[in-house]
Image (cartoon, rainbow, N blue to C red; front, side):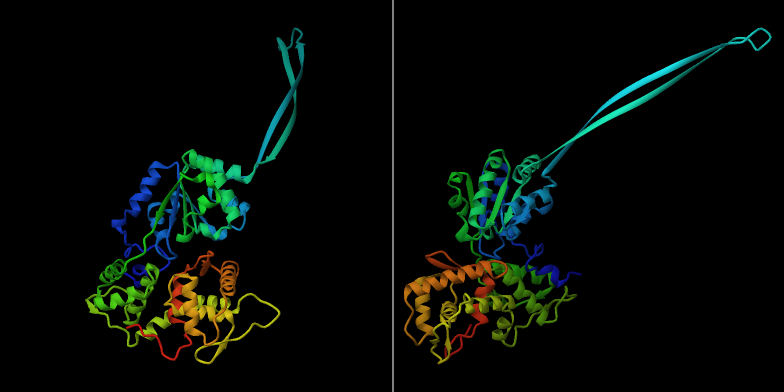
Length: 423
């Protein structure tokens, strides 16, 4: 008997519905790196695109040291996590002993007169005294030095997941410290998002030529459909290929979302474990409701926080939307982003076009829009838990989290007279 939760695994390791994507040689690339070493491997891919699952498949936790980038607030916390995982220490203590022995003794002899028992009696008494002197010397070892020594002793992979979570000055210090251990053969793997794939070289120029890049390709609909095929087969259910295609097209290239969709469809059909006889899955009565109900509450909170913008003393100018309602510039920009589909990589012109779609007022000036995007990026990084949902790099706005993109598509009601239609 196979449980539904063991088949469609969103957020964990999907053993039954794992897709190796052999045509891209992803697994062999990681294995080749581990055989060769002497470089740093940077693996990049969209959030929830399967990059962590790939590395876990080749480099399981029990044979490596995994560092979550989200837990690294400063350099000391990074090396502290390394020391904790390697069993290292930062304090050395050495004790020496010096012993002195003093021995003294006396001897007594007695003679027995005739008529007695006869013979001599001889006895000897020894006394010993021991004096000990001990000395303890302690010294503190820098956490980085101790951690690096531990890593070199073990010589097993160090994996830093979500490396992009770490502030750039801390990234630079970490990479500089790891440069020599990598030269000694320590395998180091950094997992990051695509637009931060070259952070290693940006923060440390001397790593040029010492970094191997592996980018996880965007998932194709046909690959996402394989997740459904494998899972439905394991549960002994059948699903119309057209329904599978619809779910794949709405997944924003995320296997995580596809896993969620397949699990939700099974639950809607009362399937929570493998069936004794083959059954046919029925499509939802209302696909609009199906997809809207899947919109993440976490992403809703992120949207609302971005819509508030930075807290300030004065009220912002209200902007009039095409439906007659009003909002401030932060809300207008979010509506504009959502109106693009949304795209997951938007230029300023894309956002400007979106503003024309949702606003009846005059379009804000370019410098005002870019300032809003910068502020949103800061809020996403500093005030919203987890992966920053948006990231502005001065040229493009990246929607880093497919769940947030999905929420913009299905959880946001745009200020338009007509509703969006999927089919």
